[in-house]
Image (cartoon, rainbow, N blue to C red):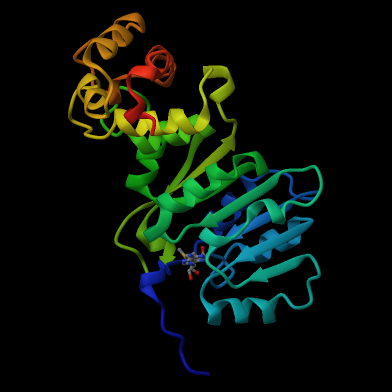
Length: 275
Ligand code: SAM
């Protein structure tokens, strides 16, 4: 049989550490009554364990050859479905069966980590939790707390949608072929904070992006650049206890929400900021 060539462009670094494979699946909790979605099953490092433990497993693999091989390997298992498609185009709502929300797992293709995370957050209402592996540097950003250098728009967005836990970090040698980076597994327990913060999801996310538009610049400057009037920005920062010279990375989501609510009242004055 000819040796199959890896497709590095598809982020194909396969997890060969059996300890890590078991730990990732264990981190999902009891799967016996659940539909599990696996992103990028590849050669099936996690797929066999997931198939044995879950009620239903839907594995989404873009690579035609790998998907074909998985279909053949799991042909006997009635609870396993292999979809050969781009996970960014998968309608996760359609995969949900019954009342229980989906469980998502994947050693992600690193070249589209942020896009996949954003997609998971778009479907946050359909997902209970996700255990996902990504490049360590990206995981550090997702999990960073306000006031830390790594806290940015990805951290704020992730933490608006989910409780983030860092589970483990793996060296390149846990994979074949070894990637050039360390990898970290995060567990995201979906718990959108919009109602508690009293903000409109779509508008607030646009606002958070504007706050971080130029990360090294002061929050007030970024908001003025986004079209908010200077005096309204000053008043909103003052009312929410945010120092005038603060950068967005220093401001937690609670205070950012207060700033947004203050500015939102001046909506009529700054239509371009919300257009
Ligand atoms: N889960 C396997 C493992 O741990 O060994 C493979 C992980 S590998 C890092 C990423 C996998 O995602 C590859 O199998 C790759 O073909 C697949 N992939 C890449 N882009 C994808 C996409 N847009 N949609 C679905 N799968 C994708």
